[in-house]
Amino acid sequence: MAVAALIMFATNVLVTKAASNKLDVSVGFLISVIVNCLISGLASGVQLVWQTSDFSWSLSGAISFAFAGIFSTYLGRWFFYESVVRLGSARASVFQVTSPAFAAVFAWLFLSERLSTIVVVGIALTICGLIVVASPARNANPKNGNHHSLLNIFSKGASWLKGSHVLLGLGSSMAYAVSTVLRGNGIREWNEPIIGALLGALAGLLVYLLTSRNTHLLFAGIRRANREGIWLYAASGMLTIVAQICAIASFRFIPVSLSNLITLCTPFIVIPCGYFLHKNSERITARTWIGAGLVFLGIALMIYMKE
Image (cartoon, rainbow, N blue to C red; front, side, top):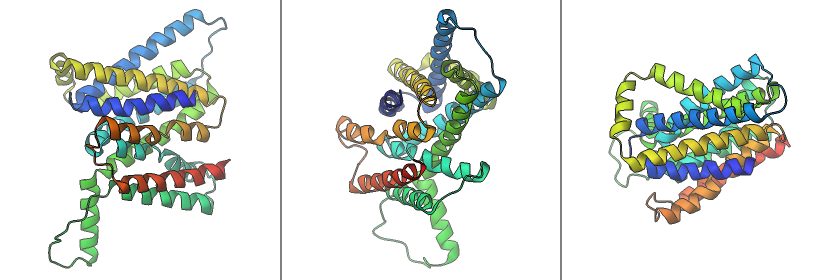
């Protein structure tokens, strides 16, 4: 199930890249989340009709799934879509694999779990890898001035963060890390991955509609949108919700950290596929491969310590 989720998540990255060229991301986001609700709602209905055992309810599990949906379906996916548009599918997929690093930090902060030296080294390698992947090319003709003053250093750092769009990738990764922890808790409290995915999708859609100022314009935009773009974002919605169900279900059988590592190894598929499908239009260079290697090395160290 984790491997199936990996394949669907990786395919979604490529589909999202193609869809973003056809349709505005805000409209596409709404389409994909609506499809999330429709697919998971249909699957939940089929499950309730065909299951032979009595249906049980867990309030704590349902709350965990709902909040997980807010972090993944709403926050994580919005950041993810924006990062694919601005960074490209290959670089955006590298950011996704950093979720275990953030999950380890969150567990240290909120669950009092100990961070070993090797885990800290792994996190440091991951951050270095992201800097290598996302950093823009150096300017061959830098402007004159005091480049070593503290104010100038902070100014350059802020400009780099904004210009490289690295915050979008990090925001998506952190949101998915929080949702993973919540879903892991939810599946232990309430073993209903399909209905849990539905609750998460509904919660994410509700929060998006409540926080969007121009919701009516988005729905109007769907009616006027490029049909190919609509179908691509609908495919994205189908891929993400089925992948989520598979990933949540896998938590019941294997450790959350192991499942998370498998499902987030999308760069292994996305980078080579994106290179050939887009004819290297995203400028995948040796820097991208080196940075991705550092990220994977850091994640491998953290997973090794967990095992």
